Structures are given as C-alpha cells and as structure tokens.
Image (cartoon, rainbow, N blue to C red; front, side, top):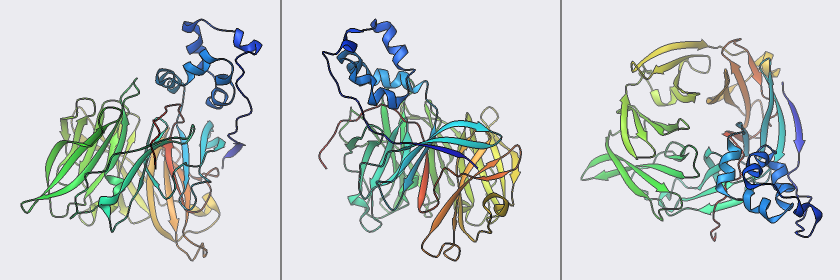
Length: 395
C-alpha cells in the first residue's frame, strides 16, 4: 500500500521587478547553491518571479544540472489513452517496502505520441505506425516546464521493422547538459542484414549520424532495449553479439560480454535486462508467469552468476484477487525492489485491457501493489523531474 499526496501544478505568482523583493539580491556564488535546495515547484511558481537575476539563473542549463544533484527518481505515469491525465509520482518516503508519493499532474504536451525513454527529466516520444515506419516522428519533451523539440527525420529502412521500444535510447553525459539520442535500425545491403547505429547530438547535429555497423542474423528482431548506466556507457544486447559496451561520449565500442544462459525457446520474450545501481541484471522466466531467476554480470570476470529466484507471486494477498495474466513485464529496480507490470485478461476487466503495477522485494520476497499508480492502460517510466529546457520547433 502507498500513500499519495496530490499537488496541482499551477503558477500563483507574477513577476514584478519593482517590488521590494527584487532589491534583496544574493551574491552570485551564494545564490546558486541556495536556490538549488528549493523544490522545483517552488522554483517554477515563485522563486523565478522574485527578480531578473533569479529568473536568469533558474533558466540556465548550469542551474538545471546543479538541481539534478539533489533530485531523486520517481515515476512518470503515462496514460496511454489520454495525454492530458499523465502525472508524476515523487517518492517522498520508502518504509517497510512501501512507497509514499506526492503526485503532480503534468500531462504531456504532445498528442498521439508514445513515450519510449526518459533521461534527466526529458521524455523521448514518438509518433509511429507499423505500416509506415519511415514516416515516424520523434520528439523530446520536458513535461514539467512544457518544453518540446521536434527531432530530425529518422534514417529508417523500408524493408525491416522491429518494435520501436528497443531501438531508441536517450542519454545525458554526466555533469553536463549534453543530451544524445541513439537509434538502431536494420539495414539490408546486397542481401546481407546489418544492425546500424545512429546518433543525434542534441544542439550540435541537425541529422542522424551513423557510428557503428554490425552483422545481423535473419532473426534480426532478437535485440533488447539498450541500457544506459547513467555515466558514460551504453549496453547494447543481442542474441548474436552478446553485450556490446558503447562509450556514449566517444561513440565507440569499448567492451563486450557474453550473455547468460537463456531459454532455448523464444529467449527474447522470456528474458529481461535491467540496470540496477551499477550492475547489469538479467531476469529469465523459468515457468511462464510464475517463477524467475535473476543473474548479475560481474564486469571484472565477465561472468554471470545467479543472484535470486522469485515466484510464484501471491497476487491475492497483494491486490485481493486472482489475476489471469496476459503478460508480465519487469520494468525497473528501485532500492531492493523490482517494479513490474501485469496486464490482466478482459475476463477480469471487461471494459478493456487493464494493467496493475506491483513491486517485489528481493529481501522479504513480498509482492506489493503500488497504490499510487492507477489501474488502466498505463505505462510507468523511471523519471526525474528537471528544469532542462529544449528549443521549441513548429509542429
């Protein structure tokens, strides 16, 4: 169970440069560290209206970076049926395996788009169709400050399509405001297939640049979403090439690891790779929707070792009902908890597809329904609110 405090995101102040408050100025060296300690809602709704020096400071990328040092990740809950009712859950407390949230209704300023990634407060969104992948449009959005950027057209091939969720990654270089976007496409050249890696350097390039090419097998869709470690490395995972480590700053390959033992039948759908702190973890389904094994990669030895076995999950104790599971998807690690989503069949929810989000504690083996996340057609993203702004472009 979790407790949720709701907060609306409204501005109640106005700027008045002639007010007495504008005469109370801090030394520049003192102002930045003091202002970074204020909550983001206070910075947006009040502090930036005190005086021009404060407003100018708060809107800089340097200040946004400084604020990010004090921020912790929460959940951005995307309502896949309505872009106006998405919201952010700030994790205020975590006691005895239960989350306590403060909810901020944000919405998303992009219509008919879906989120595919999040990094430092920036959502990577796309408008996409199975039938016309070459016409895919991508956007970056900061839902907190309603900043949006339409990205250059993707270098999509016309012959091979995979699910877009595993093709895109957004990263931010540590201690900078330098965002980069990585995209993986499948390209056919003279009858051979290749994974082709592209990068878009935000604010530098106006088109996608190819940086790497690797041979792809005929069953080319057996790739997992690349994982960013929050530092300088991106982990690209495929059944043919194992774990390839990319330096996101230099944009080169710097390492390679083998995969753990995977199920012989349908390894892609039975396996999930997640980043945990400074570890790469792999969750493999042993019995469908019932039992799972978690392995961790030792970067020094290059070997995988069994870390934990979990399941079957007691959903009756967690949510008060048996669930007929359509699919179960592991999403993120937070502390010693794994956040996962269960989509239940229409027999349980006759009005449509409903998802329920749970957390599993690897120490206590307890499954808990996350009360702050609404049931329905919702997706959850690990997200940190930030003040990073993006240049606006016509839509």
